[in-house]
Amino acid sequence: MDFARTWLPFLYLYGVGGIAFILGMILILKSKALRTTYDRHKKWVFVLLYGFLFYAGIHALFIYLAIGSQ
Image 1 (cartoon, rainbow, N blue to C red):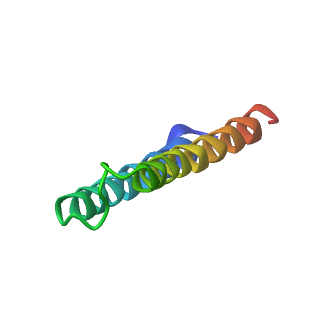
Image 2 (cartoon, helix red, strand yellow):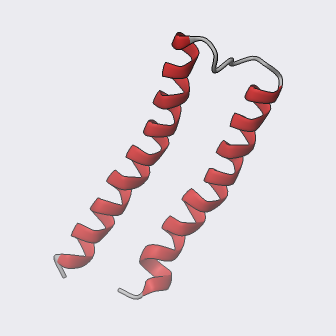
């Protein structure tokens, strides 16, 4: 399989989704809906960032494994 059918959709999904995610994070931080001075809120910022990277990593791993099996 070529790049356009495997990695390009992945890059689009997490690129455009990442932009929306970052804009959402900026919005909640600027509106003071989530304050990084609170320990509990710091934990949620970490959970959100880790979750995004975790799912992107798992998705990339499965794409890599699927391509490697051919």
